[in-house]
Length: 250
Image 1 (cartoon, rainbow, N blue to C red):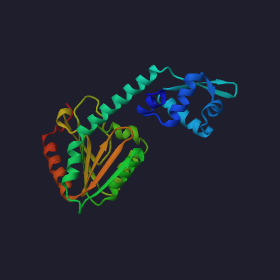
Image 2: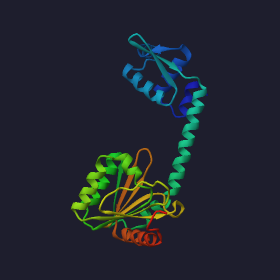
Image 3: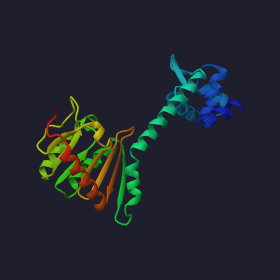
Image 4: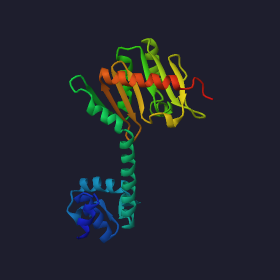
């Protein structure tokens, strides 16, 4: 197996292999020189330098008006693979933690079900807007503490609570029983508290005939399932937890 085949096996594209190997063999080069040596179109050279830099395999120095690029030592490839391995482990743990929710999607009737997957902070904002645009009277929320929302949407959250108040929608929130847990100060939300080990780690919101799951990864992933039977099942479970939760943070 030659060097290019080896790098391709660990996930580098053909042009990434060409750029990295040129720098490794020839030493520091400008983008123009890399293009000349490899035959890769110069705009593509810049693209691949950027992706290699994100992987920690290429760095640069500024010399006058030129950027000169260098290959990181091959040992950095091992560091990159170890980071990938750690990310895969985290993804597996995340999948295992959410397997019950995924299985519930498989078991519910498809004819009366609508599923949306929203990505990123804007997707989270769309979910919050859907909360006050869906006809209902109360949001039932459990999972991670509200600091996540405050960090992601510090400007939007006060507007969200204003819209809930205007539309007569209340919230009941079951959050973590721990010192310094973040809570929003507003007129629509009532909190109760459970030990972390007693709670599902996935942020779950029940409203109307919908259940939303927020996975606080990178990026944030929001799954909204519209199904009356599923919403009722989660609503009943929420009421069980609500009755077991502490009214005050001790």
